[in-house]
Length: 407
Image 1 (cartoon, rainbow, N blue to C red):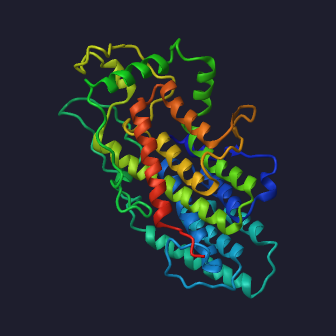
Image 2 (cartoon, rainbow, N blue to C red):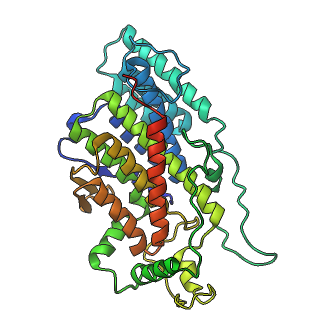
Image 3 (tube, rainbow, N blue to C red):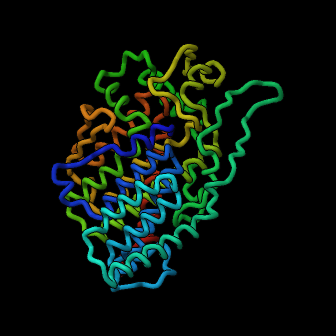
């Protein structure tokens, strides 16, 4: 992902009634996205921030209501506290600690969040509880490896020039995941051999469909690629969760669990994906297709001038981040709303509100998220299939091992 990923993190996906169902959790989800955007943070670090905030909010609310198990259960429960205030205080502390230059924005959101709650013991207890829970989450992530120096060593030989732009946040391959045992827990096997039928199939599909001058790609497919460029992929799942929550009228504690699972899982997709990407270092289509004469495969003809429709991200091809995120999001959302919930979703690009994408279900949106990476020329289909399966496994593990119902 590039800088624009989280600049577009405020993409709005909603049904007409969504605002009527907003609560402390969904309000702070949008506030956090705005804070991350204002700070110029992108990609994996942004997902870490959202995971920290939503885990803290879920723990704060369940320290009052006790409906689900907590990510960190060391803070004593306070049943008499205001759950809304506890959640808001936790969110404020996480965001101010991560983004101190955005403190004014965060404080304004906090004041708005708690202004309707009368002063008193419940409010005071909520503030204290939220801050304690946030501190516990901050301590848990303080040494998770996200802030270690970038020491990526470019692959080269003495004296040979290589591109000097470093890959995006390579250190996340070694970051401590959320709930998972290790970053490589769901590491897939290697990509296909270059001589295999599968690689040949994928090479020629992407070459045919994904080139900037492709005549096989339809205008409708090109439009989808441009809408779902890297900038708009990640925000869609946050907004889809808000829409589904609004349509189903989830309670505060249910939203807390939903968004904690979604965002811990999304953070995990970067960690597990980067582990696999930098283990295999598989080439991108633009590299493969311009070097089709050196792969020992007579069925992959070289095109020396081939270029993808999308800009190629600065990290290896296998597996696909977009498809891992899609698999994870669908898994989490289906666990709450049922298989392939048939609730229409309208995605509206915040940068150009005239641009919209409409879907009959989350499954349909996931399918398009996968296909646009081929139509855009930056992935092979096997990488997308493997990535989606990884995302589904991460979702299932999180659901089975965290934030479980207690009554």
